[in-house]
Amino acid sequence: MTLHCFTYGSLMCEEIMSMVCGRPCYGEPALLHGHQRHPVRGEDYPGMVERQGHEVRGLLYRMLDEAAFARLDAFEGLEYERVRREVCLPDDTRIVAWTYLFRPAFHHRLQPGEWDFDAFLRQGRQRFIARYAGFGQIEPPSGD
Image (cartoon, rainbow, N blue to C red):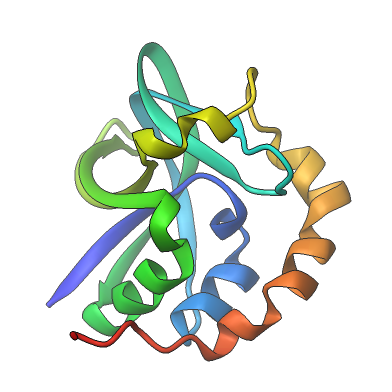
């Protein structure tokens, strides 16, 4: 079964998404209404929450398999919950995709304001890749 994934933070970098999924990934622009992303205190990545009146620009990766999602789930860890959302493409086509919301138990770690992808590319991307280089070898969690 193949599935789609909407990303809005570090995984908008195709290089990082490909490392995490264990195969080449290519994204396309997409928009998610009714949500907002925030910087996470002490981290280079953001967290996204539901928030009416806001929208998040990100990338949609199509046709990912279950193995890629198992790796993504392991990468995202306990702070995030995978949920289905409808995203809008530039031609106004709507498509349902998985995305990762920041769990309410961790909302205290979110900082005010919008997470800045361009600043991440300039200042945080290389640090993030170095810090998470081992995620290229992610093993999905066991079904214990």
